[in-house]
Image (tube, rainbow, N blue to C red):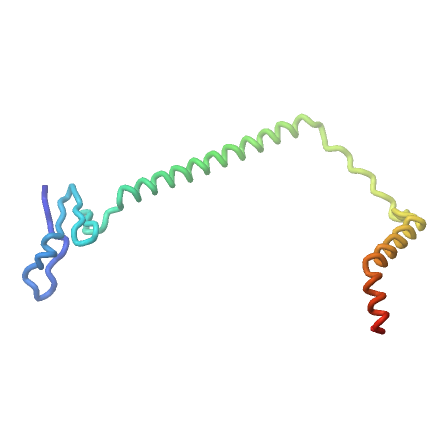
Length: 137
């Protein structure tokens, strides 16, 4: 069990302060004195906590599982669509286009729509028109 100091003496200082001397760690256990986690690796860089490692692991596994299942479902849908399309010999013929010369509604139907439209506008805005005409607006 080797222990080492986490802080080096500053330029001009020969020793660490008593508080800095308490901030030490062993290679196997990390102490949390001086208000920070003291887990470091051999290159003196902070180690990733176990919670973050677990979070990264399960996030990665979830993304990979989701991507694989998406690709598998997509592949199975395309194969089932292809199998269903192979059962039918050919697409049905297109429908015959409507002749452009014939009107969809005759002149009597158009007159009825115009009469209905005008009566509904008179019902909705009749009072407003009478009010404005009384004021000569």
